[in-house]
Amino acid sequence: EGAVLEAIHALRRVELPEAARVGGAATLPQLSARLLAARYDVSSLTALELLRWDYKQGERVDGVAAAGLRFGIAAICETLPALLNRSGGSRGLEEAMAAAAARVAEQAVTAGGLAAGSGG
Image (tube, rainbow, N blue to C red; front, top):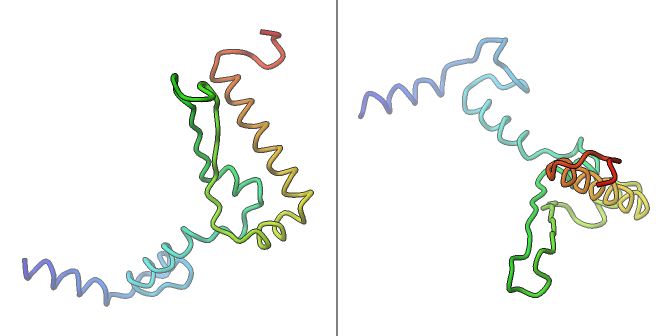
């Protein structure tokens, strides 16, 4: 057990080869920190991409008011002013939400075995 911990501590001090220096990280702890930070960086995503990123869908079950009602939610960890800014204003956000809803509806039709425009 002690040898394993020593090996881990030694690896933390080893410098990474140039080809492995993502984001300028020179060591494994630096690389880990940069990769974790990048995982949560959504600054380059559009409002539509944010809406689709963590989208979850559910459906009300029988015996409950509005049984069969489908609903969806997207967790967006951003303030409303920041989201509006990213969207280009309320109209842009409305358009992104409509596009996201249209995509979900299209996927529901496809998943149901119906071809778009088949009339059935």
